[in-house]
Length: 122
Image 1 (spheres, rainbow, N blue to C red):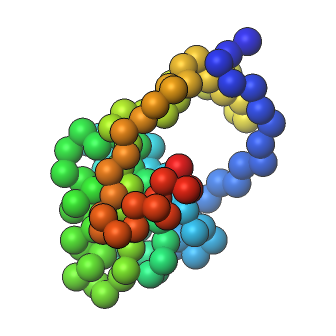
Image 2: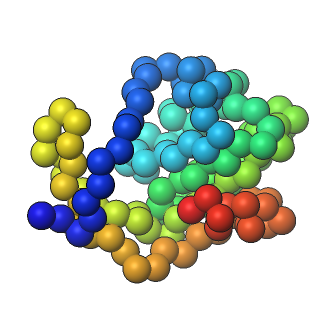
């Protein structure tokens, strides 16, 4: 038994275009060295009004995404977690064991005026 138990419907796609088209909120939860590649794949497909959450602000990757979106004319909200909200291990093809559920997670947001939207979603 883990720190959190739930049954959720999860979709999957191998296309950044499909992901961006079908999502109002996107969570980037990949190792830090993969942030740029994931963000570069998403950028051409993002649209104004979307919220992108970057799990772990270990670098300036959130600023990178936000500035590239602004340069494309996309009014994007980018939130960053100070750490991961959960820790988990995969138990099977469609099951994970959540081992840690943090009681607090610091969040930053670009632009700052979108912080209420980001906090509500997070």
